[in-house]
Length: 295
Image 1 (cartoon, rainbow, N blue to C red):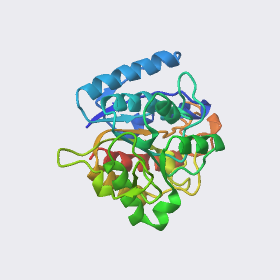
Image 2: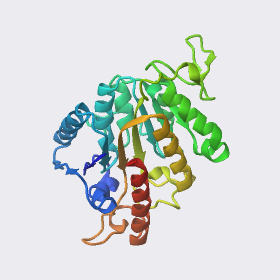
Image 3: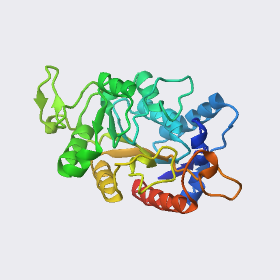
């Protein structure tokens, strides 16, 4: 798997500390994109060009951010290459606020769906801070969700839902809350009826925001939320995703190195509240996630 550093930032000041996180998470990357911080439009165009070139080569790629805005051009390019592919997002937030011209970390996922790609092919895991506008968008567009409570209280059922989601075919298909496909009449269809044959696994893109973890586990991120997943739970979910799908690409974003004075790893100087020790802990978690995503 090719590892690419993408120092893209298109969010509020809180995400500026994500720019060089890849250097701390991974000792050696294969490619480091050079981006223009002064032109968001040019930055997105540069990322989009790189994404299109990589996906055309059928290479497996892992993008290290950067904030979550980098996922917009990458997932858009993924769906252009694999129209019926599956996007699985780990995130404490839906990132479905009203879209801007150059999508930020707060609305990149909405922008992908509004670009014409089916919400029924998107699964959001771990969201727990959902604005009313976002909840409405998720429901209207058939975006599937798995809550933290579902993972914690019935992991076996959660894993079945993931398998069923990945195995469903057709970009207009949807799943009910039991993880079963719905027929056009709205009746449940057994997941086995919609799986692809032995010709190959469905193409999958995994977008991983580090804030999906509980805020006691990951503190060095722009928008930490309590009540999140732990490492064991995340690793089990990723195991099933890699078993069931052909993971073509991943991204790992929102690890924040802070924005204090030169050499200061804390977030005290950038409207954040974490220490140098918190940065070290978060980077350690990110490295373990990276190890799983590279498999």
